Amino acid sequence: MIQNIYQSTRARFQRISWRDLALTIAPIVLVSGLGIWLAYRFVQPAPPRSIVITSGPAGSVFRSMAERYAKLLARDGVELKILESHGSLENLKRLADPSFEVDIGYVQAGVSEGTALEGLVSLGSIFRQPLAVFYRSNAAVDRLSAFAGKKVAIGPEGSGTRVLALTLLKANGIKPETTTLLDLGGDAAAQALLAKKIDAVFLMGDSATPPTMRRLMQTRGIRLMRFSQAEAYVRRFSYLEKLALPMGVFDFAKNTPAEDFYLIGPTVELVAREDLHPALSDLLIEAAQQVHGRATVLQKAGEFPAPLEHEFPVSDDAKRYYKSGKSFLYRNLPFWLASLTDRALIILVPIVLLLLPGLRLLPWLYTWRIRSRIYRWYGQLLALERGALSDAAEAEPRALLARLDDIEKAVNRIKVPVAFADQLYVLREHINFVRQRLVGRAPELSRPQME
Image (cartoon, rainbow, N blue to C red; front, top):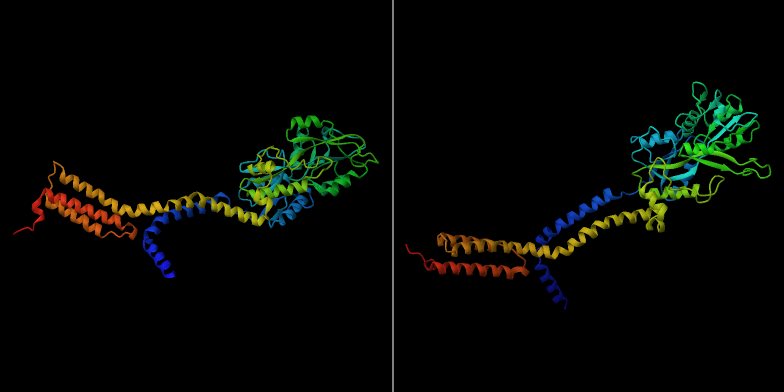
């Protein structure tokens, strides 16, 4: 029994020309391999294990947010490297500079004027950032024009606070020539106001710490400016929003504030370079939901992050996430395993599209390759026969037979698998058939030639 199986298997292998099989399958494998390489290299590379975020100065809201993001991404094995900056404007300039190694950053709306934005996309607006203007005065001030001729701290170079402050002061007719504008921000500006060295200070999240803001609000003689013209500002500057602080929101017992209080401010966007990996885009938006999704005095729960477009287009990956969430793999598998599986699927695509159909054609290609060795001689044989037997034939019969002999010798040298031997023998029979027809036209060629 075993002997019969062995002999049967051996006979089958003997019927195959392994050289021809290898030459037939090689192009299919090469094309499929090229497709796999292209998919692996260009379609969707593996997500990097670390990315860089440009945040804000030490102790600022931007910096503390970045630290929370880093902890959340670390759970999925992604390291978030944090770069300090002066704020939104410097973050934007870093992102817009291709030579600067950074992937994402916090950028407030309204600071992009004069900066090339090609190659930058938004992962969504993540929170509203109120502009807090603190001033020292016995009387309430509700218009920025009241600070003309005063000493005002507008934030350091590179901060979004400074950009917005200059824009609003200019709209109120206040110029550096007539008003002392100081490049102070954060704690330094607050200390100057407390020490009565300046009259007012502009503070926002990218240049001030929460403790500094609370300290100023609790200091006697220092007031937070109420923007009575808030509605006019948001109509004039499309990137600003009117922010309402309801009466008593800070302290019900003391009724702080004593009336509805209005501020203005832009939203802050999480801006990335357009080549950010889709999987990392998902992780960052997921982290933003955990950091910014809770309710505050300025927003409802779940209101942020949101795909709101200002200067930057929302990326396609972010739109997909806001619409349907993370992909199936990243939703149900650990990040590293989902990434590995995703890459494996990318490799399987060219295999399914190229290699499998090619392998299905392999028997036909193999058969065609073997038969082509035999069939190509039929063309010469047919041409010889037609030329010799036509009425206009002028060729000498002996020369025709010599050509036929050459064809026969070449056919005898053909190597084909056993499975195709019958076709080779049929070709030989046809050669003899043509020989007989030639001899029939010149019988003297069938007899030995006499000297």
